[in-house]
Amino acid sequence: MTRRSCWSPSSFAWGRLPRRRLVRLGARLSVLAVVALATVGCLIPPEAKPAAPAGGRRLDDSQLRPLRDAAAPTKRHVGCAVQPAQLHDDAFRRLAATHFDSLTPENQMKWETIEPQPGQFAFQAAEPLVTFAAENHMRVRGHALVSHSQLAPWVKSRSGEALHAAMLGHIQGVVGHWKGKVAQWDVVNEALADGPSGRLRADSPFTALGPTFIDDAFRAAHAVDPEAQLFYNDYEIEGVGTPKSDAAFALVKRLKETGVPIHGVGLQMHVDPRHWPAAGRIQANIARFAALGVLVELTEMDVAVGEISGSIDQKLDRQRVLTHDIVAACLALEACSGITFWGLTDRYSWLNSPRWGALRGQLPHYPLPFDADYRAKPMVAGILDALAGR
Ligand code: XIL
Image 1 (tube, rainbow, N blue to C red):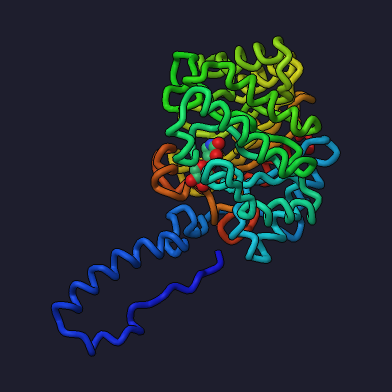
Image 2: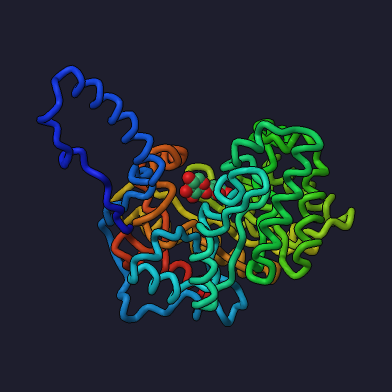
């Protein structure tokens, strides 16, 4: 993380003012300071704070085969989510470029960032990521065009035809800007409700447009960049045998059968070992999507170990095995074309924040392949073993 220098109140000449005015001025200044600090980003969100490294076994980094080299013969991409501030650290850049040949902007292509006001696009936050990817021969996965979360507030206040028009305008603006530079788009993200209903989620403004908003989003993206591969992306649709994964399958099947330009489905793969489907169920799910003629990618993989019992070595070993088996399930089917981790180092993970991490139970989770000091964890051995067919 780079540190921003923040203004300090200690430099002000407090002594020259009478006491009552000083108190009032102090109160006003503190309100102003909070607003200003929040605006310029001096208040670091909890997930941006580096995590302490876990104990436990590490691999011998001098012997380590880069993941992207190991994946090349399998014709699979191996990717990671990145945030621009992380690129200020040379060691981070080296790690990302050495091991990964695909990059997903973790937050910087989301609607709230990229079109904060109607028709006013702000692409600059994501540009360093797109440039870094090009310099290092990495593919870019664009994430995500239409989603219920991290939406600009103005979108939520629209409905009907105005909302539909806003959606199409957003897709045209964003896909058009990076035409030819973004290989895959998560066109629609997390449209389905949690639980058994199989319906579209109630907390998305797009749901009120009816299910064909999804068709229209894909058609709009395809019209702007016919070369881009277009994905439906969601969580807890990873394995066969749940109503939500059946709903995702039915959705993609309908889109394919009606000629909507959809090319793939993204299984997010935020593994919660407390209730995760066995690798066989994941493989069966990939197989049924493959039979529809779409690609499958594991788009946001991380493996939270907080709730795994035992020593840190036992946790990391279980993480290695879970990761191995899921990567192997992907490799078993040609249609599974890539595996992206939701970050690369435990130093930065959304699961380090109490808000998101608590969804996976007890923190800390150490969810990613490299530790907070960028050293390879047993999880990397699990990925390499799977890639080598071991
Ligand atoms: C997460 C980011 O990692 C966090 O930094 C952010 O605060 C919230 O969103 N599914 C998705 C991703 O599709 O966009 C989410 O990313 C993780 C869950």
